[in-house]
Structure formats: structure tokens, C-alpha cells
Length: 238
Image (cartoon, rainbow, N blue to C red; front, side, top):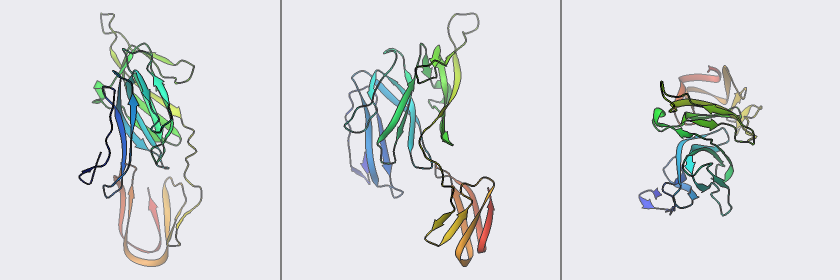
């Protein structure tokens, strides 16, 4: 891991492919880095990463063989249902990179992500997690002892399975919800209501002229901006 041009941390992996997680400050300084290890001749490939309102980190991908998803000295071992086919995994980490939990989905078939440019979309919203991807054969989407199997259809005129699309939604028990109270920052401004759906009102502690408001999503993209505002109170439609 490179930190400001210098090698800060290195990892050694016995698997064919491994996964590392690193967090940097907005100035580009390395805060921490961890890796997901495995046994010889296995692999672990991440495909998507996202965060929620509490900065909890979610990673989706596929793995084969035996992998330890715990980034500490403890173990959280998951084994693919077949050492010749891949399983899907979702791993959840705290803001400091500690493992909070993980689950896998597999089956008689094989998840493949070629049709999605080697990408498995992962979204987290309102304590729910949604993943999507492509697969061939049978795939059990239930990570518990139950079974929710989807089976891809055969190619026309053959007994060979085709590549189909799957999407699955899971309930999270993160305890991460936005505060139901108004947000106040050192008596400088107040935002209400929180959470907001159609609009929110920002009230300043003092009257200002010519100030701007920007709203960013979790990826850092600016999704709304209001410029050259005046007065103590402004209502913003979202």
C-alpha cells in the first residue's frame, strides 16, 4: 500500500488472488489497511464496495476454496460449496476495518459477472442490502439453512445452461439509522427534519449573505447545489 509515495504496508497472499481493504483521508493519507487471506490455490475477488450512513463498509465478490474474512487475529472461515466452482460473498466491516459479519451464496452452478463487465452491483439503503449478477446453472440465494434456488434456462436446442441474471435483497441488522432529531452543529446551524424526504430547512445561527449549500452522496458526487443564498432560514427541495 502506497502512502504519499512511500510503501506503508505490504501483504503476502498464499491464494491465487486476494483482497485488500484500505482507507485514506481526503488528503490521501493512509488511515488503515487490511487483507482477506486464504489457503493455497484458492482465490478471492472483490467486485463492488459501498458504505452506509454510519460509514459501515460493504464488499461483494466471489471466492473459491477456503477464505478467512476476519481482518484481525481471529478467524471467520467460509468455504465454497465446491472447490471447482465459485461462491458469492458479502462481507461487512466497521469504519475501522473490523469484520462485522459475512455471508455466502452458492449452489450447483457458478456465478459469473462477464455480462456486467466483471461487476456485481451492491447497494445498501434503509437497512437493506441488494446485490445483482449473472450466473450459470443453479444458485441458492438463501444464505441461511433454507433454500431459494434459481436455475438458468438452457441454451436453445441444447442441454447446456445459459447465463442468466439474478438480483437479491437482504435485510440488515446494523442498527444504523439516521437520527430523528434535528441536526445542530455547535449552534452554528440547524437542519430539520432529519431524516428528510422532499425538503429540509437550514437555519443559521447568524444572518449571512451570499453563502452556498452543496449535498454529496456517499461516493463523493455532488447531487445538489444552491448558491448565493441569503438570510437566516432557507428551505431546500430535494
